[in-house]
Image 1 (cartoon, rainbow, N blue to C red):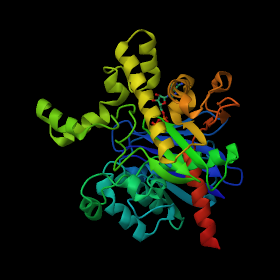
Image 2: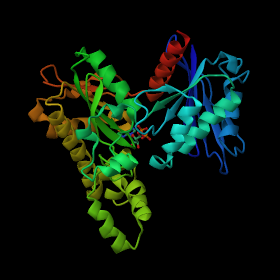
Image 3: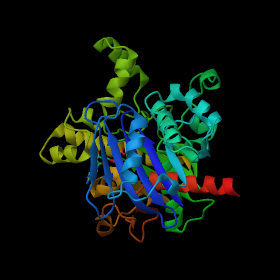
Length: 403
Ligand code: ADP
């Protein structure tokens, strides 16, 4: 079975084709600057040179048509025609409370996604456009949706309710949702498998540390808590997002800076995190680390604050689960930065009996046990694979349909 995975952003589209018999990626690509000057598609096939198409793309419909051109190209393509694609799996950011697992996209599902748009105004419209563009370009093919928020639906009210009047939950679905769901789901289940833990009882903490960053706690693969909230702004300090702040800061800064609430949220989403804390050095941790290594005090504090916040969440989640069997690091920083993994574990997690093995930890991007044999908690580097998770869920849905 061949599955095309689509991840639509407001001006971008990422895609991959999986051969699900082997789970091999046949090709992947990225379309950038959709609807603005300089649109470009970069198509990658393992072992071949990149195929780049630079042409105006006024909307996602045109972008999807060019993706089809690239994947069926006689020289650079990997299939003869879209007949070879069995299904399309879409990443959808917000499923509200309606979707606790991946689903076949029907008219009713699309209507529900439109209703969730208020909750994710930047993301859901692009996801819906991507789905409609695929339906138009490949009529009759099943489209499935995997939701960033689905994993967080495992949370109980004590974890997902904010301490505000409950009528806002009843009327407007204001609650904590958790995001990066495909990643937390994929990595926590992989951890149970690779660490040989009890599939019903395993207590796993996953630290998804990328540009956007979040932590989840799960028991037996079911989410107990997840650090992002109604939006992906809550929780950890991130590349450009603040994570948790006292809401009083917003009112205070609104007055001081003469900004409205949208202006303040712009600051918290785009100008904060390690970018803001480092005094504007960068949102990329490599640059911030370089600056810190060269004596930049603000950059050093940014990194310390970042690690401290991750450690605080791990501590909180160990308490939430009354224990932890396994801690996993994943995503850009979690998979590549041994120093961040070591500092978090060595500086803050000794009381849990966590012990990192420096030799094992000297690794990047590869499934590895990085804790010592006498560590009370197993610690892993586990690369995430959101696209594979989407493809796997899509296959499951199609197989159910064909039963
Ligand atoms: P997202 O998907 O949220 O955009 P990624 O998971 O791709 O983010 O992570 C990107 C981040 O990972 C970069 O901003 C960078 O800070 C960090 N990163 C990548 N490689 C390294 C590395 N070798 N050392 C430290 N940080 C790294």
